[in-house]
Image (cartoon, rainbow, N blue to C red):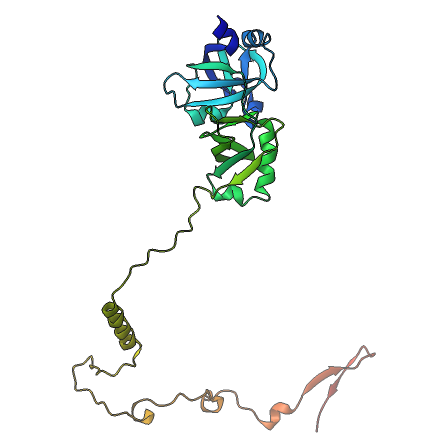
Length: 284
């Protein structure tokens, strides 16, 4: 009994994800919903700081995390947790998990994080985005993967290390001055190309081959019709006549239009401006 009062709360509860109950406001941090009976059991403790609980899988003891509480409004025998946490740990709806009160977590000083995608560090001021989002977190657990939603996009981030180092591998970050150390994203690739060390003789062969490829072609040709090839240079006039520019004088229409002096003579009528009548104008 003394041990139970020390723990404050230690129960098996059915776990459900937030979206199942329309509690999407849980998804911005790591606060959960617990039943009212949990509050009654921890009220007698002289708790300093925020209430922190440990979620532990009954199927795999390596799957656990530490969380805060948003409200004690869950149905008895159940708890509701953020979608990203539900997916990260690998829970299924209705699964039994162990929920226990944690008396004290050390105040964090440093967290080392590693984004999954370079797209996150390419955002404008990713550090400010992360710090603003972490205000919704009560604590961080080493080894967990949290999710940050920015402009309707979820970015996964691994919590690689928390300091000070402690047996629980978790720290309280509520109202704490935390230093954040960014590691290169998981999908970042700056590896140099594979360089194959070549022997000096192989290098010389490649250099000689390159010189041969750069040399001007000096071989012989073959006629397609099989006749012997005349290697003497021919003059252009021997087989191909140079192309002449189009000369319209050489392309007259036979019995066609012919320019004469008579074509310049105008015979007809004209209209004099300011006069409504027309008169014939004859040119001598």
